[in-house]
Length: 196
View 1: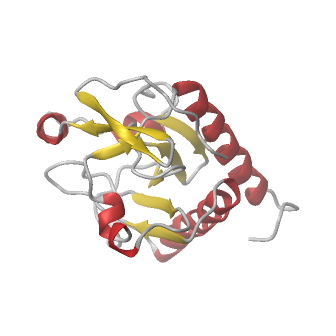
View 2: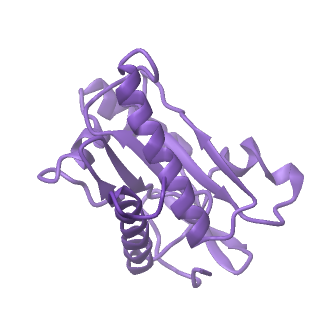
């Protein structure tokens, strides 16, 4: 699915250019770092807010929740269908805060999310990584990012995700993408759904 051009802007960003016919913006990285670190210092956790249906923020677009995880689309996606998956309970250590069974349950969901994203958008390589910081976003989360086919080698790997540029995706399209991700995750979770 090719997202249409969009002119919507997020606060603290500026319009940049187009990439493959898609409008891009550039995030103010200094403002982002200041906001994330201030929230962290105040004991706020936006992932915990998203995980609880009663406190979900609107900056991110929630695609799926179950008893183990939440999947959401970040406000500044570097690649189309870029999603984050996090445990519903607050955890800060990627391995130490989980039993083996809990960790495997999360990895099963990451596998399912990767399968869903590869069905939604052409994917040359699916990137799965856990970034975060005790000084910023401390809640453990995994980035699941589909790299489009034909991306030049020098624009792959870290270069594909370590950039202040992001795709501007209108909210209606983000909502539709989230619905497709959620429906795909739910289908894979059903006992009689497609095999995991």
